[in-house]
Length: 636
Image 1: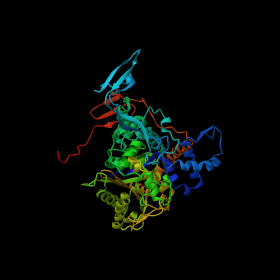
Image 2 (image 1 turned 90 degrees about the vertical axis):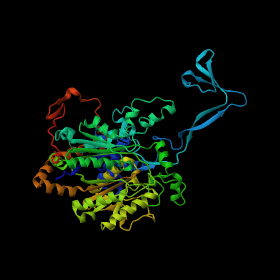
Image 3 (image 1 turned 90 degrees about the horizontal axis):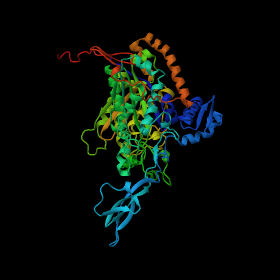
Image 4 (image 1 turned 135 degrees about the vertical axis):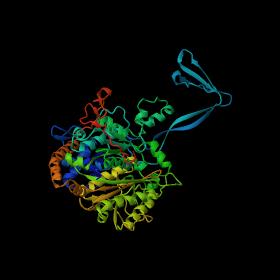
């Protein structure tokens, strides 16, 4: 019997805030929360945004004054709301009205006169152009006088205004690089450190206890970014250096690689010597990694897996790249969507399945911890749900590499079929879908047709459709992880987030069998048994996951392991729940720090004890077995 991949921890950061314990989900449905949950979430956002600190038993404002928390939150909730989710790009990223730019120009000397100017000697080019004459300035050898006869091509420093000014940004004031010795890490990796730590600590089980429960090679980390790290401290700085007159640093090339969101977890968070991998599938990247993780658990090669993704693409160059594809929502097009408007409504930039004009870029870093069901029961782990399956299919021959194709029909149908196979036909009617929902005119037609046809053939009517990009924007490789985090929140609080940025469904959307939610839908914590996460990526990278609700998973575990084992699990879970709750409480107060171990417990060859039957590594409790079975015994 295959092991079921149980979700035992999750965490991260996106435009709605911290992910663990459903805080980012709570921000989406804030008006539906009970007073305690609402206060906890906004308090956590306030400390995350460095608006409040906690010390000596009380909360303090930025100027150090002790505050009455309830009244302070009432006065500042509007500010927190305005500085979370999709909004106008803030100057801390870049000034959208003055983006640095170079204009190519040509200078021409007049008549027979040469152009003359001076340069510092260290600024002279290595290869002197043919029409240059240069000699040192008298009495100042550090200056060179240059005469140019004819034309000279130059780049003039200039600025331009970005035609796209909206994005899904993490809460204003959140500074992940200040929470640990970030050493010029690219922003995507700073978010990685925070997010992976949040996920691991959310378990309520010390990592040492987890690693002691399995062999070191039975742990895997699968994570990546869709585009790599493209800012100044990553590949972007490396590629721009020569054109900007700067030097490439020793960190820019390696830290820019797309697999770093896995490598950083291995090297600096948990010290993993087991499996690792970084799958890339454009906007379906997280689900590609999730597929590898659950396959490793189901086949038994891994017992504990961390899956994640991290993307920080809010950069003028990236925005311009997607804009010139015609993919992003430009300001002038947003204005046209609202009759009589004079300014773009940045808060409603992303409008899935309604009249829209393009998607909205976002940043996010998300991680989940999965355990084989027997390990989760043994450790008394929290059960947030389980991953039933992930299906991946390409589009076949394509006319345009960015255009949609047939692959998503296959993945959607398989995901629904997997729910039917595991839980029966009735469970399909107790499901909902987190649509890819990018807010492009093409997506609203093509994806709605895929979802509608799937609902039709499986006999569903009024199938609830959510699209969290309407709140968060499109975080590229991490987008499906944002969907997963929101889904887990539904099974805690009972509300499927509505697409509140729209007031109508577009005429060309296929919805005969769908309920495209314009408002939150109350279903109750146990009102749905399963969810579908859908992702459509450039290049024909389609992936769809089927996720099982925690109350369903608990029934499955009891059937497999028996009531006695589950009672023992419940007893062990008491301490786990208490420890997890303490981490949440400390993090709400801003007291928790990311897991970051730099240069500690580094193992070398002297720490390896080899035999022909096993490998032991100093610091790891269990050995790695070398007494392997022949997988081809029927052939040899």
